[in-house]
Image 1 (spheres, rainbow, N blue to C red):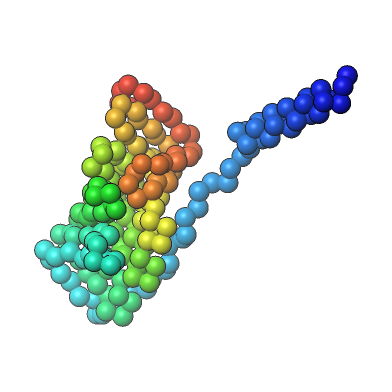
Image 2: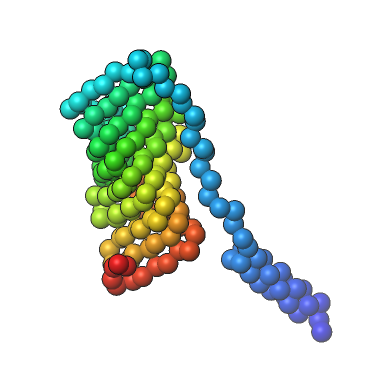
Length: 186
C-alpha cells in the first residue's frame, strides 16, 4: 500500500472514532446554581397586593412579575410571590409568560425560584410545565425539574429536567426523556 492510502485510512479512522466518542459519551447532569438559603424575620416583611416588580436594562424591560400577593423582606430585600403571573421579554419582541403557585426573587443574584404548577408559554407557541423551575438571571436561562413536559407545534417531550434559553427556542431535556411527534402525551 502506498503511504497516501495508509494516511487516508488513518485519518478516516481517527475522524470516525472522534465522532463516535462525541455522540456516545456520557454528559454530566445539568446542575444549575443551588438556591441561596435565605432566612426570614416575619416582622421585617412588607406585604403588597395588586402590584408587580420589573427589571429594566438600558430602558428595556427584561421581565415583570406580578402576583395575588407579594411579600418583601426589608432586611434581605427578598421578594416572595403568591399566585405568580410574570413575563420575560426577548430582544426580538417576543415574550414568555410564566405562572406558578409561588416564587422567590433573590435580588443579589436576580435568580427566581418558581414552585408549584409552573407553566411557561412563549409567543411562538412553545410551552413547558414543571413542578419546579428556576430562572438564572445572569445566564438568562430556565431550569425545570419534576416531571417536565415541553411542547412545540406537534412535538411533545417529557423528562425529569429541562434547561432552556430565555425564549424556549433551544431546550435540553434529561432524565428518561421521551419525544412524541404528532400528538400529545397523556
